[in-house]
Length: 356
Ligand code: NAD
Ligand code: DAU
Image 1: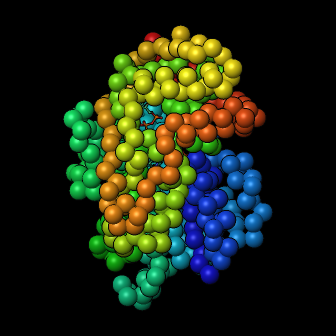
Image 2: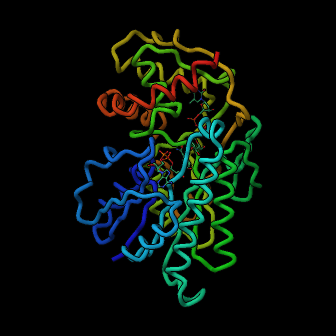
Image 3: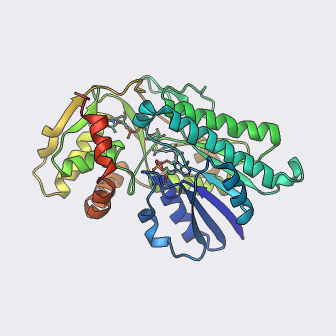
């Protein structure tokens, strides 16, 4: 029996990971700790919420005394840490929230793990593991020159979000180097799939196409992102958690780069088709708006270490993944309506009304 703490399990990637772990490992107890911010949603886990090996705890990773007690109460012996503020545009508006959750929250979990697991000094850590889920954005931005981020690429974050994630990565390594805490880190590229909050490009654009609303393309739409189906990310985390080498970093990505405007055209084609509209109908919705401040030009991940050492590769072709994703958002109208009512409307106003 292992007692695994997953933080941020009610969010986009976290909910896919929790579902995978709960279904695949009936012998584990999966404890999902989530504050349920605007991005956390227990509806994402309806199908597994009554499983005997699953518990949900509402709480804040920044609340150290609470986190400390939780480790004792559930005898936690493994952590997969995903809880974070995750949206770059929000980090530009409110950097403090990102430093607080992403840095201080990570520190609070590290300290609790060290105190509970390290009672017998470095040797006492046994088979414990602290897995930190990070992002490719810590590496900064690439030119359009065919190069990739590798595990050796120097950190060079540009947004408050990526600076906070980079800082949290450094703290995780510092706990390994200083106290011997068994850690592993993965840095993944852009994810897409079901249950993603529609502040991110793909679900936001599907929702707007459906509603015939403008599609706000930042700058010239020439920035490049490397897209991975979220279930493939969850599979990679499972593999690294069980088979990865302690102290190592693994990059995760699908070798699947898209210029934003090309991706948006694929999305339009696919969504129009599924809505029964004539091809290209929604291209008129494309609206070029003011660019994101400090907008990274290109991300591209070299995930060959993960492939060569642990045999991971993505399971889906992008076109298939996008079709599945569009279908999910169109079929799950109630989910989409619930998460885009109330506060979301204010957010949308704040982010997009002055963007012309
Ligand atoms: P998300 O915003 O969808 O979910 C974040 C979750 O964390 C939410 O459920 C939220 O309620 C919870 N949370 C936030 N603050 C908390 C706090 N103080 N205490 C407890 N819970 C809190 O994020 P996501 O897109 O699923 O990303 C998950 C992780 O993966 C993040 O660490 C992110 O940096 C990383 N990541 C994301 C992507 C991506 O493309 N989305 C890619 C690479 C890495
Ligand atoms: O690379 C991994 C990162 O991917 C994760 O660490 C982040 O948590 C995740 O949010 C994502 O960051 P991006 O900033 O790349 O994702 P986003 O969906 O916000 O934007 C993707 C691209 O689309 C980016 O170049 C900005 C652009 N964009 C985005 C939005 C929301 C637009 O042109 N218009 C938009 O309205």
